[in-house]
Image 1 (cartoon, rainbow, N blue to C red):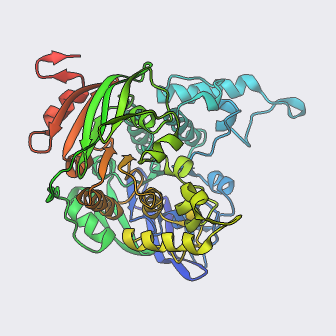
Image 2: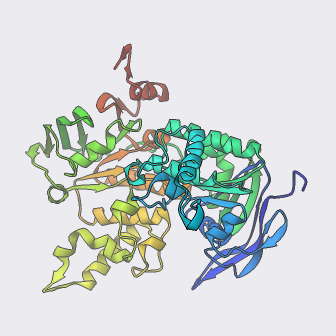
Image 3: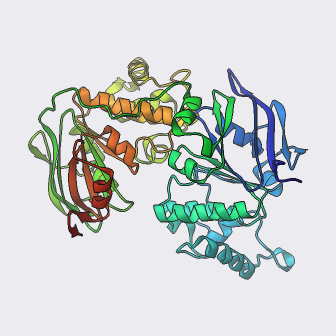
Length: 503
């Protein structure tokens, strides 16, 4: 096999679901030692294509070739046996089992009489973990690991075989910067061994850092392949969404109102200490900091999910007591959580019921919930937020990430809050939907909402915020206006540096 023969190729893949042609003749291939990005908006067909490759869906037309030999994939285990390994964004681990048992699940080494060879299992696992430079071992219970470390366990699974191709689906969504470095080192090592790597991500900076080529899907169709070194973000975005995006910051065109929320000296154990800030009606305040800086913990405290040790919360100038989310909601505070699938939605419920869940008690007619009132709320916010779904009966779990996020936002907007907190509002969302969410945030501010945006992406914070609160190790280091902030000053602040002082 010469160097230009793909290790893996999909040819003319067609997949149709009732009423939807999810894949329309898609062809795609990855070369040995290549990192090939697969990009597209949520709903473009990336996940369906990977499910066909993994044996979860049978294609209606087309074929899969490994080293140019046609093959059929009947299951993920069959795909792995063929040398095609998946590392999914959605974790599929058993919390009660050890790291070793998770990594070799279904393939545990055995001794005579079918007994598990525990020494071999733990020994082989620790060798793999050593290459990943992680701070846990083979015997660690997976449920005791952080989400980021659980992602590293998923990555370790790929290293148990000699793969021909490895597919990474949003692998850095839960990783810290140091863990990303380890991941990229693993990918480089796979390249050196001639493994083809398919890299699915919405993070442009990663795509341009580690990939060789970029293939783009839009509306279930193949739109082209570009050499990474010969293209730019604008061209990739145009192919993904079929239009130009204006990524410039949108300045506020309205007057700010009175202070809606004021936090004074709020502290919570080791998570954050003596935090104070204000946010006015019509203002977007961004919170930026490294992992562990305390941003999410502050949002959870304001929403009543955490008990504070000191400090106070004031709404419209009056101190309020918030001991639960129910208290927060009654006072007009809403939280769109970082984990929309685990904390913001019930994936097995339809769009209407997800949208109206917090206010079911207010929509009852006698002993029954008023279907008409629920549908009216859903229709209002579907139109207002441009939620793309066939109708309210669609299960939320079947929507794209961007539309799922709009359902969560719509759920809280229908409660007419005074303060809306958005934690990582565009995580795992494509560039087109991200732009829509950013426009929505600015539009909400123009209509008088006080909006807090917590984000790990500096461009996002810079684009949507009127003011930015920079945090380091549980403390507010500095506040910036949109006019005075620079990338350098923001990085210094979240690193514990304010002017000449180091925290």
